[in-house]
Length: 225
Image (cartoon, rainbow, N blue to C red):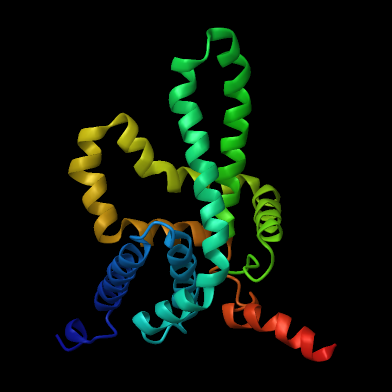
């Protein structure tokens, strides 16, 4: 009976971790609401998940907010660029079929599809810990694309996980409203981010560069010069 109520019991450990995911999901939703800060919120969530996997997260709220503030200035421009490009691509897919003729549609759709896949590959890696967030926007995009192509099978699985709610919204509206939407509001974003982190290998490498080390590297190089 004593072990059943021990806080180190696997059941209580699981429930505690589940509560952490719920809290992290809520923090992500609150800080991503302005839309232009969604990229910063996603990067902060991945950094917290990295520390949770290493057992060094400390206070969940403090760790998240520190990562959010640290990455704000660098992630907003790249996210705004990705958002604008993504909206243009989605608009092309949704409207081109009605505006263009059949001949132009056959020519344009493969090109738009390739660009959309390229966008998804970059998005799947650019906000993960370990992907440089302290360089120029083109440099960040190039680094993310390099990682995505180098780990292509895992990148495609990550895209499937991230695209699941949008696919449900597009094809199964009743399921989306009744099951998928409440699930993502409660815990879905943090769980899908954790799965993508696992697939990428970024939350399992003990020798991975920590977010603080990543931001301090340019300063050390400057001092050395």
